[in-house]
Amino acid sequence: MKKLRTVTLVALAGAAILIGCGGTSAPSKKIGLAISTLNNPFFVTLKEGAEAKAKELGYELVVTDAQDDPAKQAGQIDDLIQKKVSIILLNPCNSDAAKTMVEKATKAKIPVISVDRGVNGATVLSHIASDNVAGGVMAGEELLALVGEGAKVVELQGIPGASATVDRGTGFHQAVDGKLNVVASQSADFNRDKGFTVMQNIIQANKDIKGVFAHNDEMALGAVQALEAVGMKTVVVIGFDATDDAVAAVKAGRMKATVAQKPALIGSMAVDTAVKYLKGETVSAKIPVPLELVK
Image (cartoon, rainbow, N blue to C red; front, top):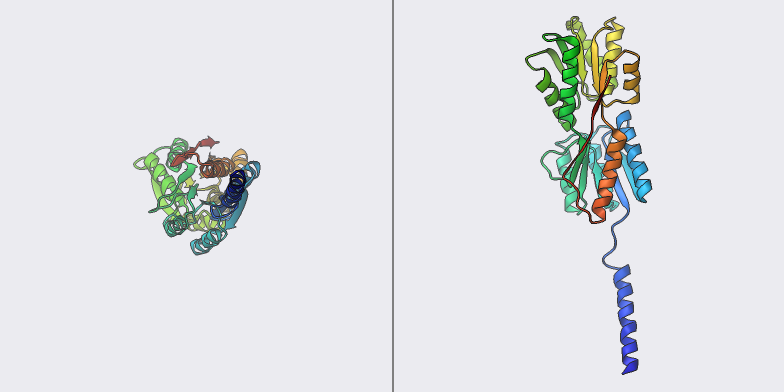
């Protein structure tokens, strides 16, 4: 009887080892970070914040750069799924196109956290971003204070369909509609070169504009270059993101203000939220990141 008991204990120990090593494997310590573009300093800083937090917490961060191409980002999400990352942090190129990506990841049982820009038509685990509507209001109120009611102004919009474009535009118009004359509202895709070109075209027919609100600093800096090239140096330009170049332009008097997001904090909070979830903690469906006006 004693011998039988010993054999049984050994068998149970062996089974415990098999259970620990086999079938139910622990989640990988890989976190995917799918970024819209690393040509924008804002997203470079966001990536760096995420990398620092991942290193601190002992996780591997797998970063992809879609170069503002939704089709390319869709392929990158497929790759992250194939690599069996435990969770995906998604900064969409296009909020509508991201719906299919989230659905694919969800089907593969990989949760998605949207970062800076939201996803339309699909449910994500959490959304981490600045309150872009509030930021648009902040920029609009500052522009109104500087140029006065009735002044002609221009709005440079971001990528059509991106949640940041929609929200910043919504907030801006909440602040200025009926008070300022928005003579042009055109997309420049969050890009500095396009901001320059679009602004060049706008000012050919609008030499009397008093202000510009750009949905990000890259477009704002492009607008500044276009205005300076034709001697319109007194036009008030306000951007959004508080990138290093924009803050320097504000200090130099070339821009009047920029709405300061905190991209490194956004990246860090995204990774921190992902790890909390992977460890079994409950996370909020929406996590706001504070804003401030730099002027």
